[in-house]
Amino acid sequence: MTEKEVILTAAGLQKLEEELEQLKTVKRREVAQRIKEAISYGDLSENSEYEEAKNEQAFIEGRIITLEKMLRNARVISGDELNTGIVSVGSTVKVKDLEFDEEMEFKIVGSAESDPTQNKISNESPVGLALLGKSKGSIVDVNVPAGVVRYEILDIKVD
Image 1 (cartoon, rainbow, N blue to C red):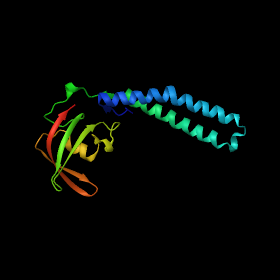
Image 2 (image 1 turned 90 degrees about the horizontal axis):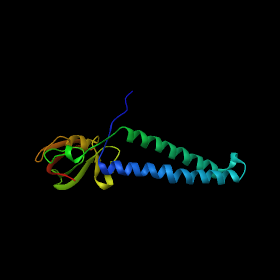
Image 3 (image 1 turned 135 degrees about the vertical axis):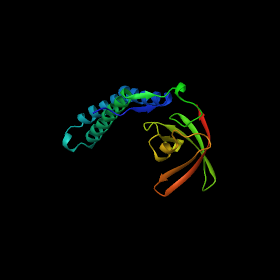
Image 4 (image 1 turned 60 degrees about the vertical axis):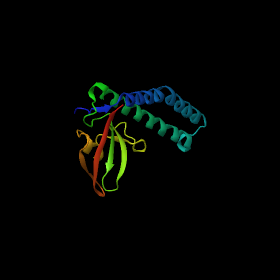
């Protein structure tokens, strides 16, 4: 089975690399020290500190594996691949909600970078999918759980 390509911006790649480095160099050591301390308390069968530290260790190791896999399958979108004529991963898109007459701005990123609180939406999300490949002035219908939302693309920028 082939692994799924992970599309990232350069900033997203750097963020994942930094997280991986932090987990490998700092967090691993911290958890190993906590396990060592918990073992020194004696009976492991009723040692909640030991259980908690082992669970955190498992989480950290799982996250390291996930990040390594993502980085191995990463494709970084370069500025050369982007143009302001159409929406693509890496574009910042200004849209107008035609029903509520509200303007919003979204940055289209790969799913590994998405963060709706920062208006970074995944290229795989309903809004991201609907916007991809469209040009300025296009009207886009987005199927969302509450129905259909209509956006007009006002501007496309490349950072």
